[in-house]
Image (cartoon, rainbow, N blue to C red; front, side, top):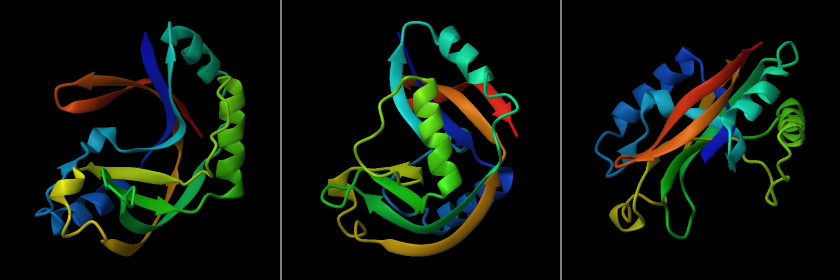
Length: 171
């Protein structure tokens, strides 16, 4: 069984911006995401018997994927009641919502019940260890354009989840 998902690959310029922000918060009691695992999830994980079928479907996007312009405006802990993650979050664009819907249809995945909140998980944490900072809510202005869509496989190990790129479609 393989656990796969679709996400946007983040450009190096955004990686550098996030790394600078992370250094300013290096004293936080969180487990920072590896730079290679940072992405923006478009279709959340689902299980497949064979990843090859999904890879073949994914490659049908060649020539159709368009660059996605994103703007992130806040960093905060989620969920509010018992934080487990630090996110940077922004607003969905009509183009991003349209792409998300098309990808759900392509992979026969049901639409999500809650509204789409484009975000990047920056760190994971335990609620009891972030009591003093869990209400941290910081405004940022991070704009970027993503030019690659990735089919990832999620693999668990003793350190958490690691993500492997199975296929990439570039704009």
